[in-house]
Amino acid sequence: MKVVVTGNRGYIGAVMVPMLQAAGHEVTGFDTDLYGECNFLPFKQDIPQIKKDLRDVEPSDLKGFDAVIHLAALSNDPLGNLNRQLTYDINLHASVRMADAAKRAGVGRYIFSSSCSNYGAAGDGLMNETSQLNPVTAYGESKVAVEKEVAPLGDANFCPIFLRSATAYGASPMLRFDLVLNNLVAWAVTSGKVHIKSDGTPWRPIVHIEDISRAFLAMLKAPRDKVFNQAFNVGRTTENYRVSEIADIVKETVPNCQIEYATDASPDTRNYRADFTKIATVVPEFQPVWTARKGAQQMYELFKEAKLTVDDFEGPRYKRIDHIKKLLSSGRLSSELRWA
Image 1 (cartoon, rainbow, N blue to C red):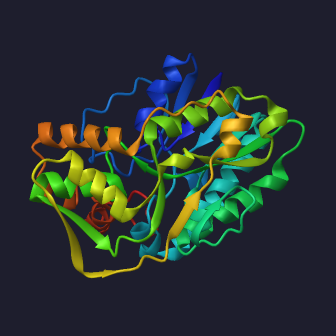
Image 2 (cartoon, rainbow, N blue to C red; image 1 turned 90 degrees about the vertical axis):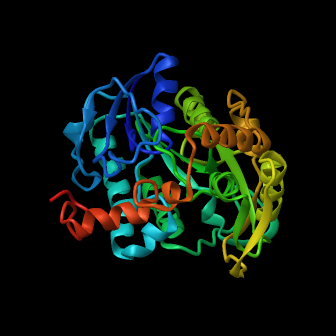
Image 3 (cartoon, rainbow, N blue to C red; image 1 turned 180 degrees about the horizontal axis):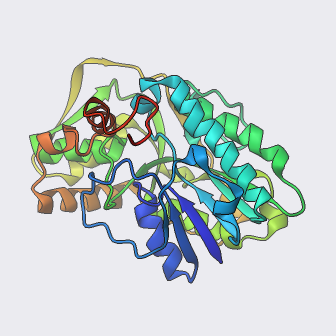
């Protein structure tokens, strides 16, 4: 299958593209490369690349492809809060434009990287795909709105699918340190403290980026009538944890560390558990293999080998928001996050 992957040079895309190639797919990347200087491990992708802003996509860019996997977005809440309108322009309007361009180009399948953060302030109950959506950030709001606006584009020739992934973790050449498991392991390795910035009570479902990639792979081959215009939570129901429980796993993984709560720790409004029964039932080809404990061990070994320091992961090379601010202050990016 000929597949366009937007955000192929990002955290998940860097891992997904080789998995798609190994499965026999012909992949083309689509990325403006905001984080080209932020690789943590050697980045190697031998694929055709469209270096273009999402906001400028045209049907001609997507002609001849069978599927679009749309990962690209401003990827976390601090970035979303930097300029809320830009979050809507890029995460919402450009994502709908991408879907419309794909449909006009004759692309048969559009798989959108949505998020379990759509459930937002949900409490302790298990949220399934029919549960009320209650996003509490611009990032979450944009994901909910894309699902709502892209669904009407679905027809006999165009199949939208919405994958609501749990909070990601795991090793990648384009590593993110703002994700809860990655972040807690990084603090433990570099400082001996599992540094928790909330009060530890919020629930998070978490999933390894290789398992996220497995879900997208499964959706490329899933029978159309089973997945057409549907949302799927991506993860495993057993992998719902309170942040304090993730901290306990990290403490048990990283030798000689202690749990420490930030002095200004407070409850996080994002609090949700997710039910992953639907994807396991409807698309049994999706077989996740990672657990939080295996992921914590992977990150511990990676950070130890890299001799990671606090300045590394808290600095502008790996902290998405600080890297963007650095590009803005240097004049390399415009205020609209376009290359100057």
